[in-house]
Image (tube, rainbow, N blue to C red; front, top):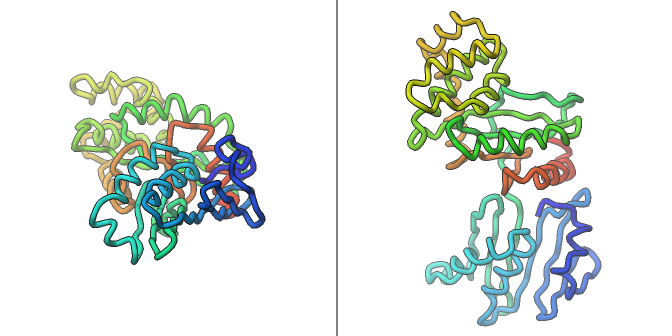
Length: 305
């Protein structure tokens, strides 16, 4: 889902499926899937399975196949569908949130139907960010890649030092990359001070360089971080007195608070969380998948929201 359709249709997993017109796949057991695409990318799938004893298992299997997550999604989905309270709701239908997907399931007298789509964040939900690498070719339909990050999070550091450099070398001219503050204060006590320090750097027009320095040199995690923050400020060419005053007055607090409010509004609970346009990336460390999601977003949305 969200990836180019043509290569998927040629994959070994579909070798025994009959491919008909209008994106219809028919499997040997009679189950079927209607695929929806736009711009050559898979956007949604509607699956139907005979409503027999094995319907839930088959529906979960097909959902795993078409989502691209295989057993990683099929297993949890099947366990969910087997719950008594869920079985009782199936005749009226229910929606399963399986980030980044939305799965609608409904059972009838003869068929169990599953609709699989990528969850789309509503327009106007994202907050603007001044922390951005602008698209090399600015336009109203630029695709926006948003990164919600925590300076103390080791996985965020992995994204920043490994995935992001790979992405930046491959991004097309219409992609804008944004950084959004999301310090997980309950588990990372130094994440907020680091975020506020980066906002102080932003006041001198050096956010991106200082952000990179915080991820590159994490000696600030040992003991009192303030001296390291000041040292990194010097390394990135900041005016020492202004930066020190900003730190002491917590001049970056309001910007970090705004980032946390946005993360709560989006329902985020982990970092890094990455969105391409209105779609959340399933694996923020997979640069190739992110590039495919950018292509999908361009096709499905005509650019960023």
